[in-house]
Length: 327
Ligand code: PBG
Image (cartoon, rainbow, N blue to C red; front, side, top):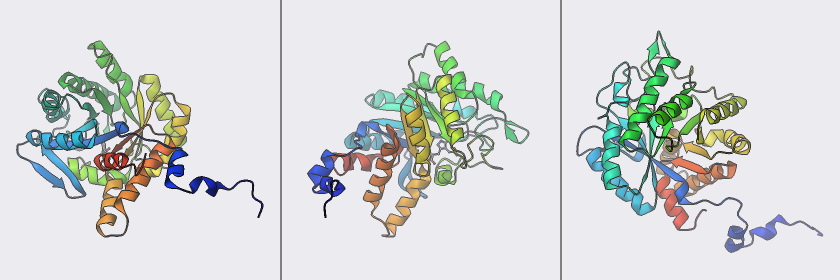
């Protein structure tokens, strides 16, 4: 057989396959989400996310040590408060859970890069991502609270803020608030392309943030839409977003690909709780090879165009990168 092109020529050995790899990654591009809650001496496993925990501030050190050992350098903090109210006041309280966790973490572990999720849903009694007017979230009234929340995180030591609420205009509102207070150099990573997704189920159990009525479809995106994702990303960049995120990751790589081609800011992909839970459950049953699945999921996000990958598997991926299994 006379064949000019034989693609198999480049697949002949591991060394050669590594030589011609199109996608290369580094563990410095990983972000690990961590849940902190009120109380002391608490490290409780999240039932739907085996291997992930809720930590009280004093126990958080344990997790940060593990991240340090694994070489994961960026942490995304989620707070679980004791007290919730209609207006989510715990989100922007000076002594709120995230604010206190940050102060401790920055003092004891200044080598990490701390990103905070800016949203109201963990702090509102109704579980929605903003303040209500009738039975819907009031967009413009929520903006001020989000901006206050972002500012209080930054004052407590956040290196970057990541608004996940999906209100219109929140990037502009947060940028303005940070700038007015002298924080012109704090970047914003916008959850720009965030879908109303069943993949967040385990997170809502972890954070106790499921809405008490209705759903999030009036502010998070409809999963049938692709071009709308571009609209959201471009709007956020116009408003001052430094990094745009696509969330979830696995079922939304078309968006990662589109957006990474179209914009000139870094793109992040968030592999969410439901993705983690599915892999864990199947692996526990012996139905899949956990490491290999996790590797494929991560590489596919980078291959699609993400520069940053947010994942509950960050430590495991860092290890796989160290071992040269991926990257
Ligand atoms: C807060 C927020 C959510 C997630 C990140 N930030 C939940 C939601 O929007 O309901 C989901 C993360 C995950 O599922 O891992 N709004």
